[in-house]
Length: 246
Image (cartoon, rainbow, N blue to C red; front, top):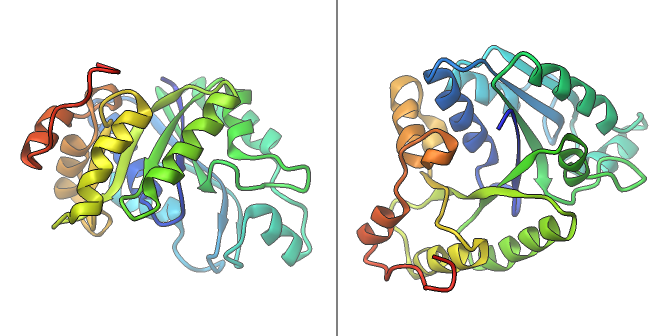
């Protein structure tokens, strides 16, 4: 798993914190890691962006933010509004391939969801993942529309022949209500596998060893952590997963 693309089912679901957790775990096991953000939108030039948060949380030193736009729009619309050329995903792919040659893990964080447009031809982060032959880690929310958003994202991945690396809840509430609790079984059913992790809401405000421990306990062994989906369900007093997928 040298390249992993991180996408979300919506904005605000915790993609950046998940990207930081992935790089934290890689660095903790002595694996060289890098992080690439092809487009940062909705952030002023002098403000801290997603890459800055990943640096603060994980300590990763090899990072790239290829373009930044102040307007909180899709990368394509933001470039159009600014009157500048759009992000080149071909350029991003070349950079990621170069980084993958000397890093055990390159995390690529998308902007918004899987099918956000990066240029006027409709290129998306899904196209970047396909050109790289990379798996896609899906970060989901736990709100009222979370299951539908996850279903659409997973369906789009399958339609494009992309392999999901798993599904992670990016902002698990401290006191989960009935909607969040019901999401767990539904998300696992959609993914046809146990959750690949659940990071607590507010993890992005931590730092140092506290965040490193959250990353370890919040992501599964397949992602370098120790998250146990069965134990997570037991703590929530949820029934075991259905026999339809394991």
